[in-house]
Length: 249
Image (tube, rainbow, N blue to C red):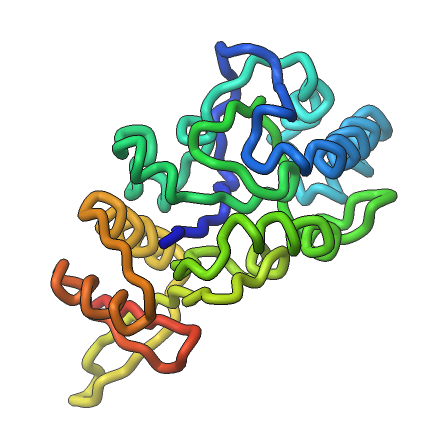
């Protein structure tokens, strides 16, 4: 079983490890594809700052991200488990997972395509939703590059897919179950459900950590549901490729 995650918008801003080695990352055969994105990103950030900020979707207080994007080849690195921050990663705590559990995590990335928690990366800022000149939309770019090698790596394992929609566009696992979080409340005596965003990240982190710490290795969505219920989560299968996690006030 594989847990598929998005990166986080928030990231550590400095590392202390060796320079980036594209050949040492998960799926080293993607080195050429990764280098093309890194070069295009550095060239964008070396040009007019206003243009780069607009294309990357950065605000006025985030100009320091441009320099980090230009320094990818020379900046000190840190493990992806330490680079990615934010709500999902705060709850998952990948840095303190056992090595065998962390080895079942894959993170989709607008810059690197896919990485594992132990991969050493420089700080950067690039969302999968960006249209990066001259490569175009990164979701489509990585869909072409990832389909064969990542599909082979995942194989027929069950994939617990905790990605947001923009990252889900880059790879469609053959045996994936997308995790959706619904908030359930009683309003005027009637049960109401709504989609949540911030809470969804926290809940996906909780779900992923539960599965990895307890060494769950479900082969089917039904086995996954049974395992999560045993771990105290309220879940249901509305369809063959979807998992609803219900959180209540």
